[in-house]
Length: 338
Image 1 (cartoon, rainbow, N blue to C red):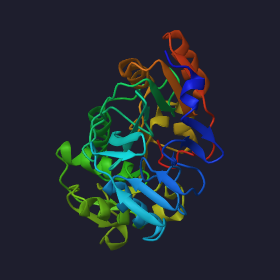
Image 2 (cartoon, rainbow, N blue to C red; image 1 turned 30 degrees about the vertical axis):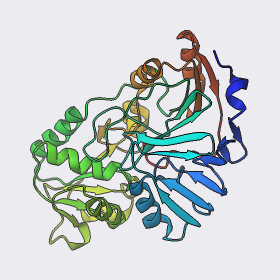
Image 3 (cartoon, rainbow, N blue to C red; image 1 turned 120 degrees about the vertical axis):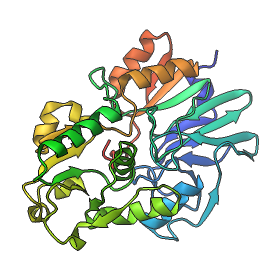
């Protein structure tokens, strides 16, 4: 059975993040490096200044849209399931289910397999390829919601609550705080899946990423800017950045019902803090049962926890008869809104 020291001969944390030594690359480094593998496009994982970036085609498109065409010295696209040999390291990307283009990094070296999961969720998402379980010797997992209290509701239930509120208050605008990359597009797609066919109105900050999703093949139906609306949008659904929920921008809307879509809405104090009249427990991360399920099903004997509620999950890993370790990597701030 491999030990932590055995794994650290070829995969270890350093000042930039998690480094694959024989492959000469970092995964989601927190500072500029020569060669980076990027799991997805959120800014706490995808940064500018790297010499070379390898990622899925969708993640590269997102990085270039957000950070600029020249945010890295060069880009190499690797599609899900394709294998790239780098010396005696075999590398492939498999879906993480987090957002469009998100990937887990599967690294094989001298008969051992490590999976660096990035951010992931196992719940179905019409805007992202579904999570793919990969059996491995070492799993590197996030722990954003790594406490037993976090159990996300089914998406359909939360969208049903939103539509029920819209029916109960047809004279009011329903304005939902949602992050611009991943969450906003998922909410729109979930509304479409529930049969909502009216326009979804957007704060201007959300439009560029929605347009990019459409260009990348994700059908969002009719979307429009609030600034182009002929009235104060009574009875309509509006999406905006969470920061806009309390600013003057929202005053143009009709007696708004303020909602917020996040896994943190499981915590009532968080819902009160953001002023959410309608908290929607919709997360782009795995909840506690999904984290435990994934750790068990991978068969990994070694599990490293990169960021989030590390202590509780490491304790649980020990109870499962596995070796756990908190890496305490810096620079992951959950920009994606959970």
